[in-house]
Amino acid sequence: MTVLFGGDACPLGLSVQFLEAPEREVIAALPGGLAEVQSRSTGATFPRSLEALLPFQAPWTRMLTAQAGGWTALINNGLSGGDSTAPGPAVMASLGVRCVLATHAPRSGPGHAQTQLEVVGPGGEPPLMYIRSLSASATDGRWEWFESGTPFRFEETERYQEQRIRDRFDREMLLRYLSNLGVPVEDRDYGHATLHQVQVDWGSREVTLTEAKAEFGR
Image (cartoon, rainbow, N blue to C red):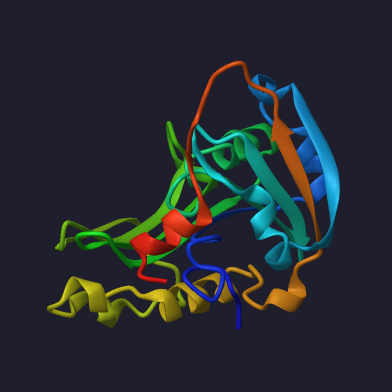
């Protein structure tokens, strides 16, 4: 179905941001703090361009964007498959559109894992404008469940009563939820990607693909 969200590209593509706007508008609305950005076409579709993000970094300095139906997919080269906190929410606020933040990270290291969906945008709860948030996550093997906002009509809310938190929200549910929100979940639905290199004057911690794969036993 897709190499993203813990699929064949893992640990690349674990966390992707989607903005309900054309790619050109998203690029134009990137925050002022990212003004020094060099952009170029990768010549390949979004799922086939993920390695252009390497190495993983903290703080991140590279992004990919691509049209995906009526949405623009955006991912950065933050550690652990991408940082979901930026710049999507800032672009959402600038454009006044919905932003969907989706993450699925399979078990890694000493028992870390996460499946998360956040929808923010107009009509959301100030100050961060959250409309709906769901998360089943584990840290060192200890699972926690979180949800806020009004459930969407398509949600499989009966699953949230499962005794094991890991069974309440998983990759397959995440993909179904994205599809119901109108976000493409098939690789063929993504357009060619644009790579954006942020020019910075600070150093970053870097993690190679080989090192990241070792965390996931790949």
